Image (cartoon, rainbow, N blue to C red; front, side):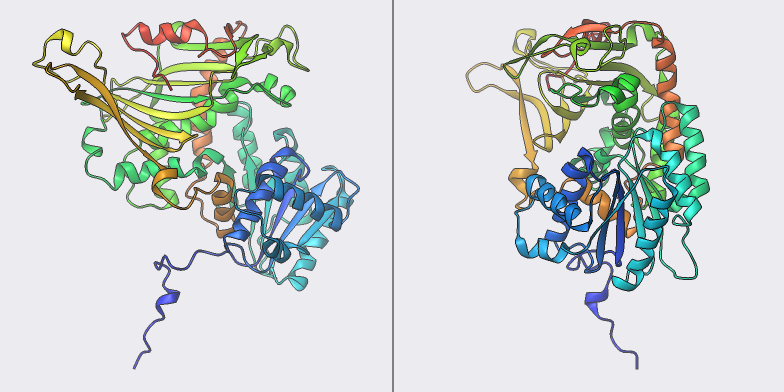
Length: 509
């Protein structure tokens, strides 16, 4: 007689969280801002939530004359300063002693030999059986050098003799155009096998972005109207109130389109516009997103539908700020855009004829990322014109950050003896509905890397399809100057004219 199965071992049982196998996370560029402000705090938060294995090691690699103790002190300070969850000494005590530091430069063979020996030693000292993920928190130009070092030492191999897995995590931007991305993809795939490559876009780790799947495919009320029969247009906004900070060198070489449109914004578009996948598996979701990205078509008239701008002196949040050309280490003759807005369409049955308006920029009035689905007007309204003069289009707005949530905007009668109609809003906010605060994107994504779950990670084909959209824009803009816009405003006048040409306007975010 067969013994009954243990319900606590059921993978579908939500009472037990998914916890990775014993493993190491090797962070290249561990002394940089990304590591200090995002990665190490996320690791602490995962530990605080009980989602890391007992045998988990953080290995730092950087050009510093540090030992393990110094690295641990830096990590402790970073976690205390930037962690989302409350500080608990007992949690840190479980992590303490599991920090290893290897000093060296990316072209230093001896340093990588020491790193290889360190990871090998962890098999015996921490029982990680060869499991290691390599996180590239480094400039994209350094990717090829580090990849070749991992290949030379054999650290990229999922070695059969000792078992275990090896994975690599690369940050955006992945390449600077379609050709360079294709070359880099080829190099990565020669060093690591395709299932072991995780191209990270932290926006896909945000709870609100993931909730788009639930909103569309777990409810019966939205999907019937999620198409060109009912949708007038879609606006996707990613606005920042900050300038370029310390990223002058990187930003001036790339600009807003390469830095944000190519990855974050096009990924949001793909998720919002995709067809329902056959299942919530990585391959199924990537297949549907890729169909959308490959169906994108830019407008024939790029002169009026591809707008870029550059911020000048102005006021943001009540304080004066300097223009882009006055920023430290920015050439006075720079023609790099800090704002980009573009109109495009998706050539498929669902979205034929529906314009998608994308915009992103720095030094705008506020920080906000949202997807606004704007519906068509009712085909006939039996009300007097003066009763509906302030009535606008119905909207469904998905707020990605801050104040994550969903708002529905629709018309309602104003109390009184008349039949005046006005727009009202009903909203759902994560912070008000759920008692547990949403985890940071890097928490979810780091955990998924350690678990080997690629659902939220774009693959090489998605990267290629995204660059196929951006490259023609960059070619069109080559040799032109961006339109100036005052800091603290919503961008250049050309972006407003783009929508006004069809009787539309940007939503007030």
